[in-house]
Length: 163
Image 1 (cartoon, helix red, strand yellow):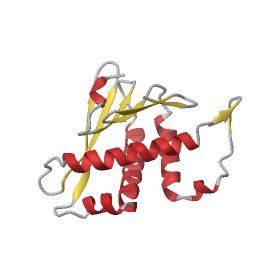
Image 2 (cartoon, one colour):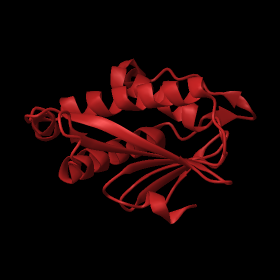
Image 3 (spheres, rainbow, N blue to C red):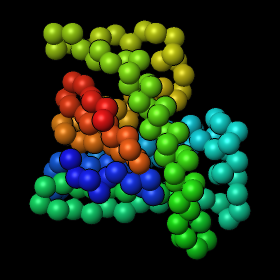
Image 4 (cartoon, rainbow, N blue to C red):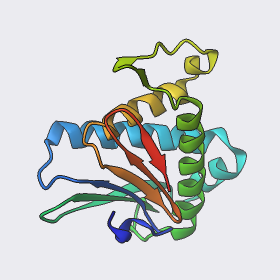
């Protein structure tokens, strides 16, 4: 795991491949943005952070090395692109904790190689549907990890580990 992901100024996604399909990156960024925004708007504290003027927007940088593709997500002012470290730190912590709770509640993704039906009532929640989409995309490349500050979630084809 690359230690560059363990930073509270970014929500990091490290994918252990050098080249990524544009459609995959586009879809991943879209579903993560939707999940983060929905989660942030569901809490009065984080919702207040997003209502500041100028409006905070989720921004990204993508870098590549021989071993990985690293996507860093962070909030900036919409007009100046000035980093909003406190917004990123608060929303990043809320997102990783909520996503980790979702994954822990659904930790058995398969039994003998077959998907376990998801029929619990919490899956009717639109945020949980978004988290399910995020998880599915992150599992596409085993060894991918999502991190913020001191929390890192590593994905395998059929599971995950929290570090």
